[in-house]
Structures are given as structure tokens and as C-alpha cells.
Picture: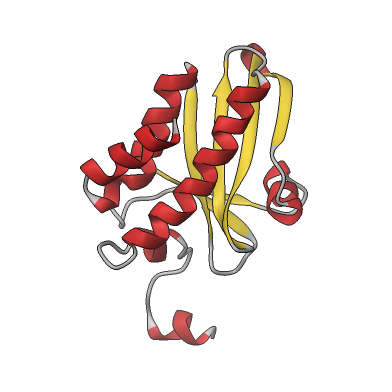
Length: 158
């Protein structure tokens, strides 16, 4: 799966890299939904990225007390069966050498095999490198992590 994932990401525009990973995972695992959630600069929330323009509202999810906080803190995949609608939720950390970039969240219609969980973990790890490699071509990584507008007071932490 990984070689196909990397080839698909390279064949598309850099700003579409997170979407490419989501689509490839959804297709190969028959997933209901696949989302990339990027950590904001404060470290207190994640932002669910979509194909929306940078100015559009995105879902911000506070981390304290959530499974997302647990996955980022422990750097381990989380699998929860019995999610509403009978789905299985899998959340994997998207990290590079300890830098927590975000999370990959997958909802499957049935319990995953160990191979499916491993594919999600490997895809999350590959996504970290894809995002880092694409930094110079897109600001997806930077604007996705901002929960405050880019104004001088926000930059200074005022």
C-alpha cells in the first residue's frame, strides 16, 4: 500500500497531499471516513482539515480529556469498537521524530484486521513525511495549525 500511496501523493498538487492519503486509505480499506487532524500551534487543539480554502471555518477540537490527546501523548494507535452506527474508530498519530504534526482518523464499518491497523499506522507515518516534504510548495502545514488570525498581536502572543 505504501508505494501506491507515495506515488499517488506525488502525482497530485502538494496542497492535496492530506486528501490523497485519505482517499487512498478509504479506497483500500473500504473506510467510511478518513480525516487528517492537524495540531494547532498552542498544542491545546486539533483542526480537522478539508479541501476548504484557508479562510473557511474548520472544525476545532479541544484536546484535554479526548482520545486525540491520548494518542498524541502516547504516540500509539487507538482502536475503539462500538462507535455510533456500529463503526470502528481508529486514530493514529502523524509524527516525525517526536514532532506531533497531527492525527489520522479512520472509521471502518467492521473490526479491522491487524494488517489494516498496520496500514493506517504506516500511512500516518508516511503522511508526516509527505507534509514535511511539501512545506516548501504549500502553506498547508502552517495555516492549518493556526487557530488565531495571522496578525501581529497573535504572532507575539499578546
